[in-house]
Length: 478
Ligand code: ADP
Ligand code: GLC
View 1 (tube, rainbow, N blue to C red):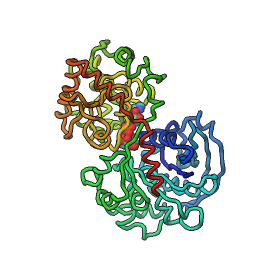
View 2: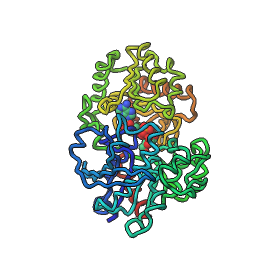
View 3: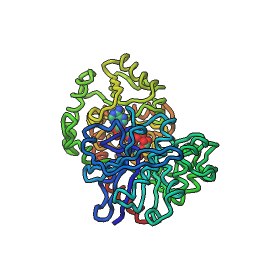
View 4: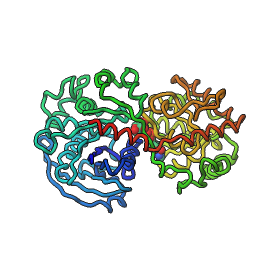
């Protein structure tokens, strides 16, 4: 039996800001339980819904030093869908309406969390063979494992893995403050260790000290070795390329299942989608005040509204995109300029654009189920889960060929009748627009072909099963 502990800043269903939460919360369900005991540790944020807090059991508490500070650490646990979760408690650090997002606080918050996570291990009756860290928030875990915890039997043989879900976010702050927070010796703050371009960099520390490094698609693993996608760490990625692999994400096929999903209006499957899927569209048109027309080509977007997701391209051709024969449904929150852009077009083209500037699990399922196409023209995309959800719901993805989008969406080829979606290569608004118009022409002009694209998409298997086997092989190799 191999014991594996995921340490992450978020996990569904407790707390989520993006795809990381889906991965950390659901991937652990899919391991061979007779061989791998995979557990998850996250902060006990104040903003975790009370209904989950009520189910947590207190294990123990202690005080831990963070340099000159002495801080309370509580440990709670609960079982959810067969997975054992631990929660690190501290009301000062994990206060607030959202889990994180203010870097000046987050730097100390996640130094605390990383050290508290390791310090709590001898007290929880679970000794990991491998600690699997996710993103910059846990970058200090492999560092602390080397610096502080390697003595003594408990930690000596423990291995670590660092998974990069998004290289853009690295946890960068000035060296002096990070030294003061972490109490790491000065020798750690050199360009071959935690320092990058004069600052301290948590993710870099994690990448340098982890035994293995992974990211969430094969293409992204290659891309980040080059300057354009490397976010100034491409040199480090090349240096560690022998230990770097890409394992594509999956989604939870039980939760995202058009046949059983209780959040959508009409259930359907690979056979019945031809008749039933459109009933979701009709209901959504009613709910959102769009023109009631079952035939209208409806494009969906469910996304964080940031430049990563290609909204500059959309902004550039928004008028042309929202033509008479298109309906656009947007669900997302993020940068104000994009929120306002969609609000503006919702006002301008009221019966064909619907801007839903909020976060809702339920509405996201409705959009995945109702739309004909799903637009995701990302500038970069480590994996992307939304296009997988769209495929699962028979909603044809239109994507830019980058990272995980390139690995999971096969472009339609009208001559061979292959492909599961539409894609374009260059980060160019008119290339995107042409691709959308091409998809639209197939939808309106050749419904049989369109339905075959849906057919092929719904047959793809992006459940966690195959990725989980790859992680198992990685765990075995350590
Ligand atoms: P990222 O992690 O970069 O945001 P992913 O595609 O990996 O992108 O994951 C995004 C996840 O967040 C998906 O599960 C998607 O459905 C969800 N999501 C994004 N915005 C919203 C929203 N406004 N309401 C509900 N779910 C959302
Ligand atoms: C990040 C990436 C996204 C990926 C997710 C889960 O948020 O932006 O592409 O799917 O992590 O790995």
